Image (tube, rainbow, N blue to C red; front, side):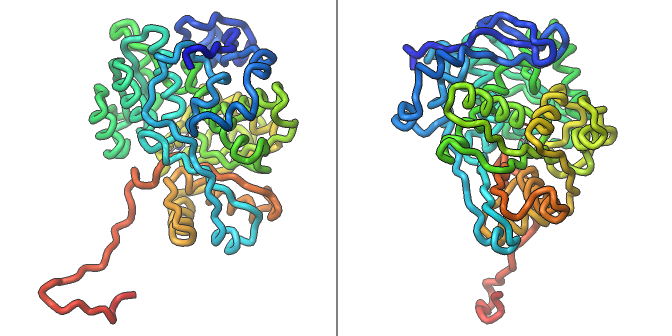
Amino acid sequence: MSETPTFVTHLECSETGKHYAADTLQGLSEAGKPLLVRYDLEALGKAVSKDDLVRRAPEFWRYREFLPIRKAENVVRLGEVMTPILPAPRLQSAMGCGDILIKDEGRLPTGSFKARGLALAVSMAKELGVKRMAMPTNGNAGAAMAAYCTAAGIESYVFCPEDTPQVNVREIALQGAHTYLANGYINDCGRIVGEGKEIMNWFDTSTLKEPYRIEGKKTMGLELAEQMGWDVPDVIFYPTGGGTGLIGMWKAFAELEAIGWMGSKRPRMVAVQAEGCAPIVKAFEEGSRHAEPWVDAHTIASGIRVPAAIGDFLILDAVRDSGGFAIAVDDDAINAAQEECAKTDGILLCPEGAATLAAFKKALKSGQVSKDERVMLFNCATGLKYPMPEAGGFIDLNKPVDYSAMG
Ligand SMILES: *Cc1c(COP(=O)(O)O)cnc(C)c1O
């Protein structure tokens, strides 16, 4: 990889289009909006072919020409495997629908797809000489940042809402981050990071407040297209918090079309949220381009408990341009979908992943998705990181084991 040039030309404000220099540390644009990485796609398309990819290791660094890192020695590795696309045949026949494909992101380091974004953000931070990083998190992003920072020799500070799942808080701390809980939401934690910048001299790695997490999440779009023979599903259900993955995949598809690897076909992008925190769904239904902050956000799907997303307009633009929609499901439907998928096809979804299944079922019923469409659901983390219902019959070894009583 050391000899591979990158094709980055500049960073661009996602709202005004103003250009900013690459290869310097950047946060938001002057307009306070996310910056997007732009590439010389013509040169990129000439430098790499689909066949070149086939010969590379099955990890997301195989898309290095599409990524911004200049020096191989700055790539921080913890085993960034390509994640499988699982079929769910029994669920499919029970639901009487077309192909259900589950992209299982729980296989990534730290057990969630946050590893994609943070592997990139931390590698770029290393390349640009950052010594200390900070972020607010509902759990998974903080765990990924802690792990990659520690692997990179960068100090990390992570701030969580006090009701963040304990397993996340503990894994973050165990992987080396200075870890704090605050009695507020993720946005309040974001304020701690923002306001502490001067005093603490840390780099703000909040969702979309630096340009590179999107580039990492973009690899989901590149990867699923390659795995599907440079095709895309008809519909993608994506559990949407900050929206990095949805925005990143949408960017990936545009770049693939620009270099001629894919046609103009796009999946309909569906933003899935929880009824207890659905700012994007509300904005979609009202026809707005920006979402109002959600008051009193609550859901068991902590990864999508994001009351205000700075990239709201990028999410809503992608959803609308794709002909998709935004949809909310309640926690009971999430729990039921998780149990159904686990018991039907042996796939343990995380609550956010289960939300996509619940949303798909709801959309099938309402006719927003038809039975012949090929659907991809995103399971963004391993279900093992979350609390599960109590289970297990008791066997008293002081008595003979009663096999006849076993179900
Ligand atoms: C962060 C997270 C999400 C939301 O992802 P975004 O790209 O930020 O919208 C969904 N599910 C899980 C498990 C997460 O950790």
